[in-house]
Amino acid sequence: MNRLSTPRRLVVALLGASLVFASATPALAVQRVKQDGERPQRKEQAQKQEQARKPRPAAQQRPAAQLQRPAARTPERHEHWGDAARRQPAQRQASMERASQQRQQAIERARQQREAASQQRQASEQRAQAERRLTDQRRDQAQQQARQRQDVQRRQQEQRAQAERRLADQRREQAQQQARQRQDAQRRQNEQRAQAERRMADQRREQAQQQARQRSQQQRQLQHQQRISREQQQRRIEQQRRQAAQWQRDQRAQRARIEQRNRELERQRRNAQYRYQQDYYRRWLAQQSRWNAARHDYYNDPYYYTPYNYRYNYGGRWYTTNSYGASLLRQAVNDGYNEGWRAGRADSRDGWRFDYHGNFAYIDGSFGYNGYYVGMDDYRYYFRQGFERGYRDGYYGRSQYGRYDNGMAVILPAILGAILTFAID
Image (cartoon, rainbow, N blue to C red; front, side, top):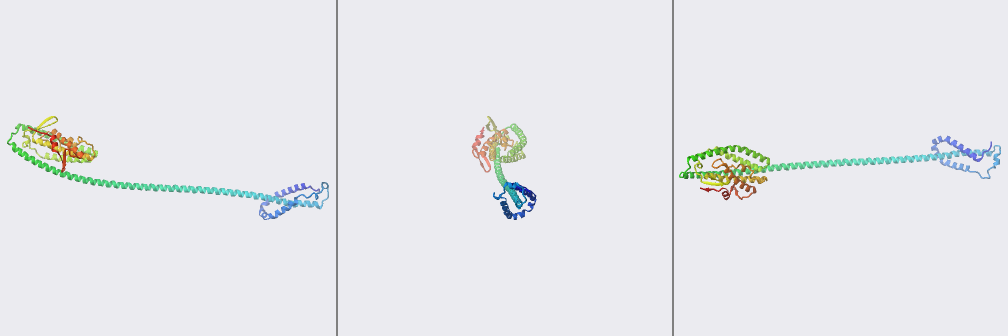
């Protein structure tokens, strides 16, 4: 058998080592633990094999001629084959170490990758946890804010309800107080009106008694004086009867007008004027009832047989009457001033505008008139003259044309004389 050259032997050894490594690779995975413990010994053996693979010195190498010449198997050739056989385990060992190193590197890379993935998972979980915590915090904050808003709204509603209750209580107390005040004022006004009516009744009774005494005295005087003729007396009585009948018809229609006026005042909420109007209507009805109950005796009344000896002028015309007619016209001015004063004060209390022309008592102008002695137009004219001046004093709270005393407004004598002037024939 020919001897192989050193390069060829190396190639053959490498091929053998590769085959051995390929056949031993499956088993290496099983022997991983054992190899880890034998690493120092294998390292030492690998170092020895590396030294054995180094080329020999030139003195020890044989000439190329001797290599080409066939020779018998010698112990040296057997020695080289043994070296190759000994080198194969070393090469396998080195290949296994390299493979082990590669596996260790792959394992390390896998471990690093697993650690990186684990770190990424941990980071993702931490981010998710942070996001969940942030979401929980935001939800808790939103819930807390919602509860706070609800609490604020509830407190506001309770405060509003308490304020409304307090306001309702205050309004109820004010209404009750105002009602008590109105009742007290009404009671005082009723008392004052009652006192005024009593005083007025006393005054009128005294006036009636005085007038009765005067009529009696005049009758006694007239017994010695010339009386008008019987025919003149009869014409005067007939005229007065027609005048009284017309007056009664007008008064029946007057009631509907008064009630309509009261409804209008109620709608306008003129409370003071409404009370005055009610009082006016009540006194007017009482006055009409007294006159309707009395039976007028025309033939024994001195007015109808006494000559006209008084003259008065208004509207550019002269009119005649006697002392009884003159007395009634003076009463018209006084009653007009009294009613005007009351109406003006009522409008002032209501805050209503100055308007005596629109007052019903001024438009009516019949308070105190019973249909006798003078005509309705004459009486209404002088009643309105007194009413206008009384309204001015009552509205502005002054005493320019008269005075208010003991529940009665009385016009000044000078003003009465300026309004109504008589000429005696």
